[in-house]
Structures are given as C-alpha cells and as structure tokens.
Image 1 (cartoon, helix red, strand yellow):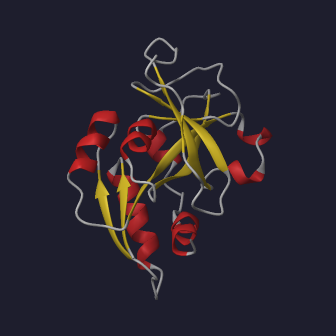
Image 2 (cartoon, one colour):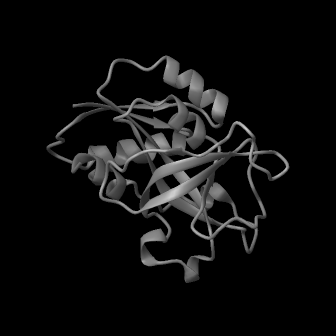
Length: 184
C-alpha cells in the first residue's frame, strides 16, 4: 500500500523518517510530505499530493490537561487518533461553519476530539483531553474516507510554565505512531 504521511513541520517529517529507517521490513511504501503549518497550507498540500492509497496527517498535538493528571495513554510522545474535529475562532468561539466532522477510527489507538484554531491557543477553558492544533479540521474536511489523522502528544494546555516547543519535543520518538500505521 502506498501511504503518504503529511506533516505540518519539518521536525515532524524528520521524526517520521527516523522511525521508518529503523524498520527493516516495511509492509507499506511511504512518502513523507511537509505541508506547512495551518489550514491554508494543509489544503494546498492536499491538492498537490502524488498518487497514493492512504494519506495520514501526522504531527505533534497539544492536549488540554495537566500531564500528571492525564491517563498514561496521553503522556508525552504517545500517539492518538483524531476522529472528530471542529473549527475554533480567533476570539475563542466556534465558527458557524465549523460544525463537527466525524470519522471512523482506522487504528487501534485512543481517539480524541480536536479543535483547529487559526492561532495558537495559549489559555483555554476547553474540556480536558481536547487536542488543539491548526490543521485537523481542514484535513478532515478534504480527506478521502480511508485517510486519517494520527497525532503525537507534544505538550499540555494551558502551559503551566513557558516552554520552548522545539526543546520540549526533541526526545519524542514517532516509532509507536508508525507501528500503528504498519499494523492497521
């Protein structure tokens, strides 16, 4: 099967490629494409993808909650699948046309709800275990039925202390997420 993995950032592409390089006998063939961050970049990238059987949006995810209070499956570096998304506005309200989009699960991973925002959400009163990002809604809106979103937990909202995102994610490995794709 030909799998396209779409990553918003180059650091995510590097982590996907590093994980793929450690697997001797891949079941699928992979191409990793960096879309760029945000809804518009995601849409443009999806319009220009090469032929494939499945497209996976794979990247980091901020999840609402305190790391020490969340279940083990939501710890730093853990993979999750996004099966429902909504669009979150600049002022913290849902857009009228941002009604939730639902998809069926494709992996044997925990499934979470995702809000896509046009800007990074720093403080929130969102429900615990909600994922916040800038791409999921567009991908869910444009994807084919077999495509899906796989996110890797990178940080927790609201931040209790200021973080350097790139320093925070240095040690995160995407192997568990890649293995979930290989085993689907």
